Length: 77
Length: 124
Image (cartoon, rainbow over all chains, first blue to last red; front, side, top):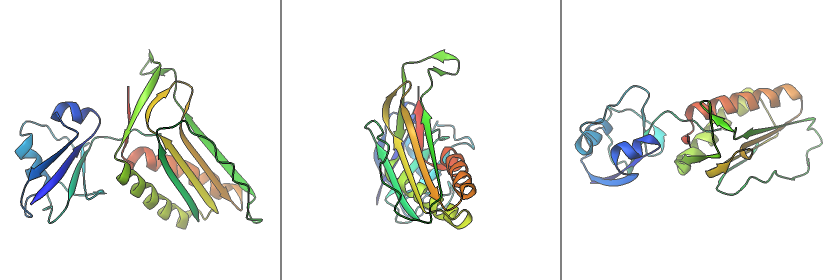
């Protein structure tokens, strides 16, 4: 299956993309998927992941999700 | 509770909707404005970026939670995205309620939660 990986804010420059389709399997976790495309990225605790537009778990399999978004600390308002 | 959530790249225009519920006795308006300095350095403006579909969903969820805690009549949230010059409005919130305390509390908690959980970023 394919999943879309989205990056925001400074992570766009670090990762080199804002959106990217990635080949993966249902039992892979967001951490596995990011590890395949950016093995050197440092995921500190402030970086959250959203699966299908809801905050999720870095270590829970993505199942048939269509999107994961890597969410650095937000700063709206 | 009536809600209006809007993310826009255009300058924010304050809603002009008249009060249509005779039980409304309070209206709180909040405007978040781009300051002329960022971390002590002078700036001309800021860029705002968002995961727009998720930001809408998160704001709706927050309002759902807060409606149970602070019953209000109506809430408008308008967040501008893209480049915003200094002095212009980045965030507008309007809350109408029967009495002032519910509107003031909802406004305060809404902005706290927006700044914590809604995927919008200020980029200098």
